Length: 459
Image 1: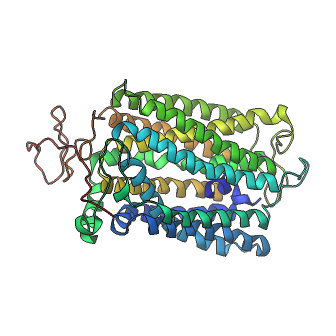
Image 2: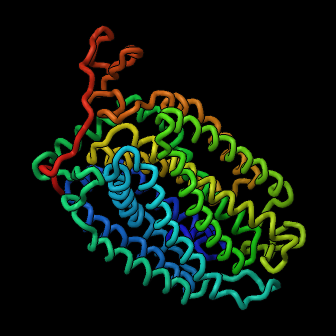
Image 3: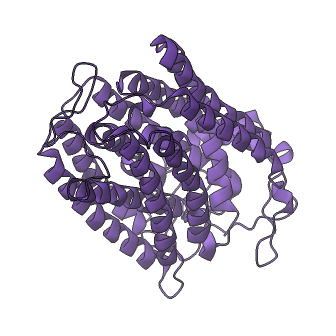
C-alpha cells in the first residue's frame, strides 16, 4: 500500500516536496534499522515485530490527511523516521521467512509468491486513487488525493498489520521433505552474539561485493514515481499506472521464478542467465525512457499547472498519446520485479541458516536505503530530470561487474555463507587467496558443512 501511494508521485500530492523529504527521513532511519533489523527479529521473533512495524505505515499515510487541511508538512516529515524504523524491522523479518523457509530448489518460487502478495497491495492501492478520481476529466487541473483516499489506505494498512499476528510460528512450518524451519533465539542468540555477527557482516567479502547492487536496487523509484509518473500523467491516470505497475511486477516475479528454480540447469547457470537477462532488459528500459525524457523537462508543481510534455498531461482516454508511456511504466515495474527477485535469490544461495538470512536481508535493505536517500533528495533539490535518469542508468551498469563476480561463485548447494566460514574466512580449493585480516594467507580452513535446520530451534 505504501508503494501504491508513492507510485502515484508525491504520495498523492501535486507538489512532491513534502513527500520527497518524508521519504528521505524514512530511508535515513531505514539505513540504521535495516542493518540492525535482523538482530531485532532474531531476538524478538516475527509476529509482533511485523505487526508493530506495519502500524508505522498507517501512521505515515494518515499524516497526509493532516497535510491536506493545513499544508503543513511537519507531521508527514516527522513520521518518516518512525516508518523507516518499522520498515527496517519488517523487511528483515520477511526476508528471513522468504529465503530460509523453502528448500533450495523452491527459493525462486517462495520469492515470487511473496512478491505477488506484496504487489497485490500495490494493485489494490492503485485502484483507490483511480476510482476516486475517475470522474475527473482529462482537462481537470492536477489535484491532491482527497481525504477519502488516504482513509482507505490507513484502514487497509492497519488491518494488514494485525494480520501478522495470524502467522504460524516457525516451529509449525514443515518443508516438503519433512524438515523443519526453526530457530531457538532464546537459547542460541543474545544481544552480544547478534552484535558480533552484525560486525562480521562488514568484513564478509561476498556481502561487500553486493553493496553496489544493493545501493541501486531502490534508487530508481524516485525517478519513476515522481519525474516520470508524477510529471507526465493526470491524477486518475497516475492511479491507473500505479495499479498496472504493480500488476506487471506480479507477472514478472512469477516468470523469473521459473528460471531461478529450473533444476535442469545448475544454480550457477541459472544465476548467470538471470543476470544477463536483467542487464539486457534494464538497458532497454532506460533507453526507451531516455526517448520519452527528451520530450519534456518538468511536470506540474506550485508554479506550473501543466507539464511541458507536448500536449500537456497524458490521460488514459487518449490512446494515441498514452499507450507508449503507459506501457513503458509497466515495463519499469516488470524490470524492478526481476531485479528484486534476482537480488533475494542470489542472497538466498549464500546460506540456508535463518538467522544469517535475517541479517543479510536487513543489511541488503539498509544499504538499499542509502541509495534511496540520495535518490529522493535529488528530486527534492530539483535536480534536472535528465540528470536523474542518467545517474540511475550509470549506477546500474557500474554494479554489474561485482554482481557477476558473486554470481560466478554460486555453489551447487548452500554452505555457511557460500564458502565463507563463520569467522569470515573464504574457503575454496580454487580460490584460497581471499582471507580475513586476522588470518594468514597460508591458513586453510576445513570445508564448511551444509546447514540443516532442525526442530530443536524455535522463535
